[in-house]
Image 1: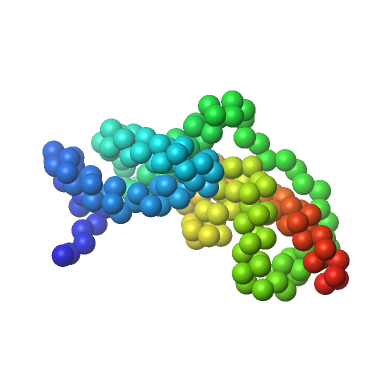
Image 2: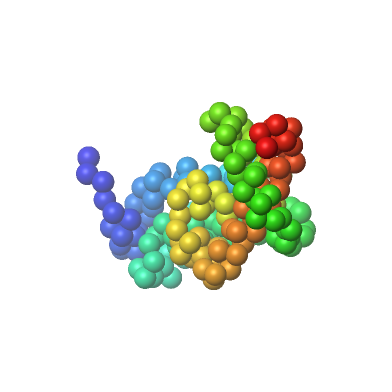
Length: 191
C-alpha cells in the first residue's frame, strides 16, 4: 500500500472525507503522546492532552497554512494543549530559573557523565530530567532526543528562536546542576 503525504490527507479531509484524518492520527498519535508525556509526566493526562490536540487540529484544519509542515503545526497544538493542562493541574506559571554554574563545573560534570557506561548514563540523565520543570524537560527532549531543530521547537512552542536557545541553554545548565547532585560521588571519584 502506497503511503500518501500529509498534504494529500489534508486536502481529502477538507473535501469532506473525514475518514482521512484517521491516517494522520495513526501517523502522529505516538509522537503526540510522547510530547504530552514529556510535559505532563502522567500517562492519563498525556493521553487526554494528545486526544484533545487531535480534536483541536481537526476542528482548526481549515486554518492550517502550508507555510509550515502539518507536523510542526500539529505539535504546536499538542504543546499548547499540554501546557494548558499543566497550568490547570498545577495552577502556576511554568518558569525557568537562572542557574549559576561556572564553565569549569559544567565541563567537569559533562566529563563525569561522559565517562559513565551507556546504561548508567541513560539512567542518570533520566533521573536528572525528572528533576526539571516540565517545560525545561520538554525543550531538552524535543531538541536532543527528538532532533527537532531550533526553528521547529520555536514553531511548536511559539517562542522566538533566540528565546528557545536561551531556555535550552539554561535548561541544560540546570540539568547538569541536577546531575552534579545525583552524581556527587562519581564526580568526586573521577575528578
